[in-house]
Length: 251
Image 1: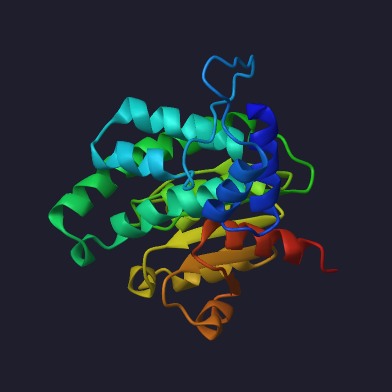
Image 2: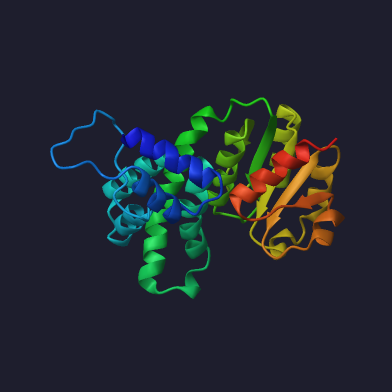
């Protein structure tokens, strides 16, 4: 029964139904078992109308064990896109702008970020697999947070792409050397801000020569990216992966 609940809920979320509504409908279709009723399924039952409530509660009380258990459960319930969008992205947004939150909220975001980063990196074990294309991912110089880029890699790999990930604070000459070695279909560079590209634009233009280069940078205009031979990407990892996959289908 629990496995059927999880499959039904996952299909609804993938079809565009909000997570909480998908959980509510699934509970209506498959009510909880009565006391004493057994089920051999290894999947945890849906116990709330909000499937992310357990994860939020665990993070709010700085409970690492509970947070890992919640991520395990969510991974059974829904697609990776839904987990990234509703379970990971909210904490990345809080961590990226701590001045907009309280000290306690900032502390929780800082607790959640490495925990969720680690869970997403577990999926890197299969990043070499994928026939849809090969993507080389790197954070620009002085960009020290790589979590959003890791999430983009996870979303790309879920779409059949092989991923080569270089991590944070990578010199463009290093990215260029890796690109020459692995011949990627696309290169994605995550940049903290346009100010971080001062003195680096020419290197970025050289990197874009002869390959498809994407830049993810808050506030960057499309025209600015084009001046460096690059395409601008949404900062949301799932939307970014969708755009790369969609662009690859266009001759």
